[in-house]
Length: 75
Image (cartoon, rainbow, N blue to C red):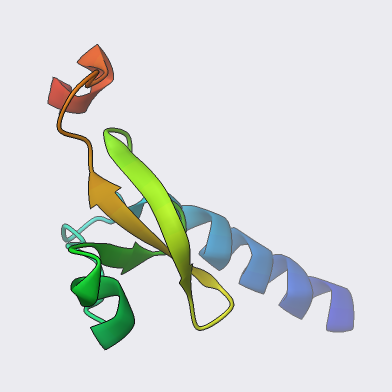
């Protein structure tokens, strides 16, 4: 039971990162990250740059202004 529960949690967590959720994830607004003009995600999306940590787990990311990757425009 313990292995199946941890496996289920692992599958749920790997489906959340990068902010590419099924319903569209715009990130979480946390005051320290919004002061840096960023959003908090479980991992930075493509086209976003890592800036800092938000509450130990989340990553504060800002949109890249130059040297944007071509994968950003893919659906």
